Amino acid sequence: MDLLKIFSSKSPKDIASDRLKLILIHDRADLSPDLLNKIKNDLLNVVSKYVEIDSDDVEVKMTKTDVIEGASPALIASIPIKKIK
Image (cartoon, rainbow, N blue to C red; front, side, top):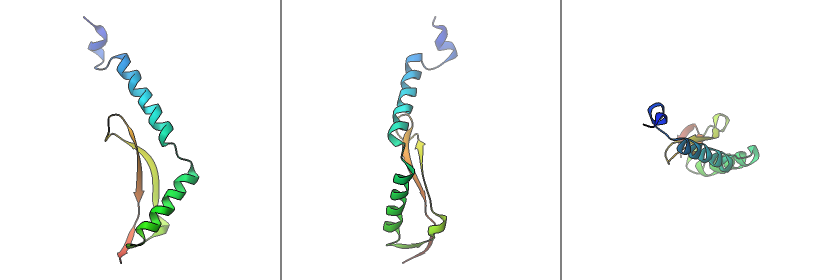
């Protein structure tokens, strides 16, 4: 009888593999503030072609999501729309 399986549903190998995936994703998604600001400006330029936006309340950030196996990087943008052009 494997005592480890009684207390954990994952083996140490699986846990180590998951941790390594998280580290790799973090390294790949770690954007500098300057690059994130450039992405934000590009997004605002494109969106503003179609709608009038409130640029003072725009929030763009990097986070992680579980859509793909393990955590994967995600860009989250909150862009308040004043009206459609």
